[in-house]
Length: 295
Ligand code: HEC
Image 1 (cartoon, rainbow, N blue to C red):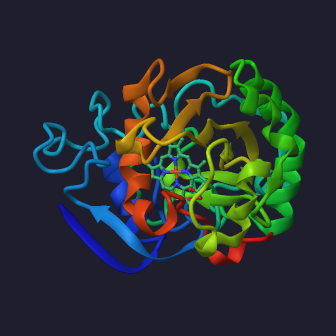
Image 2: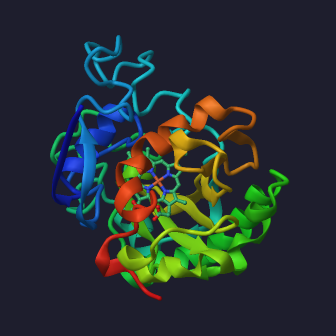
């Protein structure tokens, strides 16, 4: 297993790793903002996070082939931004992109055939997020929140129903290459309020819950709901391998893909396989890039 410490530019290393892991649909120059990830351990190449890593039967195959299970645009990956459930909103739009998309040669249009080549087709639905200004990202998120809340709430999960009332620790929705190349926000409940100390947060107490909602914006400026990501700190002995965190993944329509130690547990194993890379230093909390933090 290869592990190294260095400053990662999310626009380079993380997306490359995530394309291989099948979590990120597009890593074109237009697709990714530049979140900076501070010094931390990250597993690469031979990482168990990476279903396409060497020794995996998927490795040799074309990552973009239609029937390849490692295809980030394939239908079976629950983190697949192209998967069903990422409904496109008819009312939440980014006006600038709406008008730009009318012109196929517009410089910033990710569907511009003259743009840098993306092997995973940046024109595919949900493939890659366009860069938005802070105001655009906030406005489209505000519009979408009621739909996100009601969709996640259908899961019956208590936190999915209430997270939107918790404190948020990012100053604008930002693109997370590790959560499907979608725009995301991070929330923490009261027991997890030390999250706002970021690297100095220490270890979370049982009952601390961290939540991340997500959404997509397509090339035409239309926003759509993305999955909901939850981490709840459980008591000691819950699951040593997950650092005693319970991970839950909920689709935008409320369908629960998996919960650690619960139904679909295997489906969320990849969550802690990645998050555990910072188990020692940061109690598995990956934290967001500096420029998007607030507390
Ligand atoms: C390949 C690595 C990776 C995988 C896989 C992954 N995450 Fe994350 N996660 C991160 C990174 C990096 C951050 C912080 C930066 C960001 O938002 O992109 C983060 C942040 C989070 C946060 C906010 C709390 C924190 O750690 O700061 C939650 C909640 C979360 N992830 C849940 C999940 C769940 C649930 C899954 C699985 C369905 C998952 N993650 C899969 C890397 C990963």
